[in-house]
Length: 329
Image: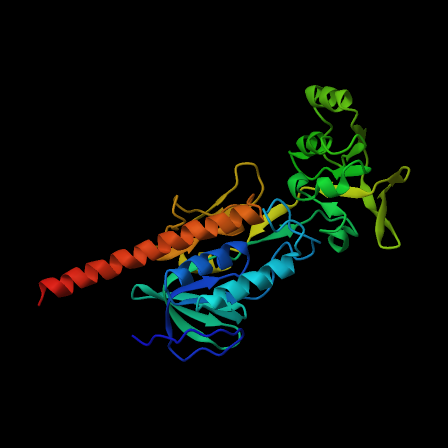
């Protein structure tokens, strides 16, 4: 077997035909955490990452013990350094294709790198698909938000708008009421709240505004208001949006990995068992590609667990081969 030497650098060309114990596709919290666990287990690991983590627009990561407020880019940089410190390799590239060949996987990156993987971990994350309202994407992760546990503290006591974009809009409005007394639900063409929901919103002092949202007003690079197609300007300092979570499942689909739709309509994700193993032997998944609701710390924890599971699977294979060779002496 042509094994690569461990390289403490990024964007390095890999030896033609090099075989790694594990190739990790995606260098977010899940992929890097798995790679660290595998490196510490003395496995040869290659992380291929294009630097497209969904949380990069955010100012900081929250609810991550000892890392609160660290920028997502810095967290990824430190994570890559940890992977390298345990002998792993990080390649800055996108994966063009993955093909299953004889129990292993042929991985080709868009820079021409081609390697073989005994096991494959998909940690490709997801993309947040936002409603078609002008200005939302530009403010995403700044003052257009979706998760109260990620951003609620930062917008506490502010004027918070909630843009209805799905069946969870009322729940979002009531949830963000925990952080501020000034919450407004903009229906934007969605159905009126039910009688029970309207009573709940009224009881918590959440205003409900009908009509279509035309866009956002931004002053001095700060969100100032929600603008309606027909109606008055509504001052807000933060706007909550429920995006559709579109997991990056292209590689999974090419390998025949099973996916399914989230029961709450959030999007489609990769199906795994409790260890992270997908429907295709040798292929694991971790992070948002298999858990649409996972936060950064959750993804990191899952990456550790899946990394350990992959190491155990490799160990069992090696043990089986060793026993067969021992018996054949």
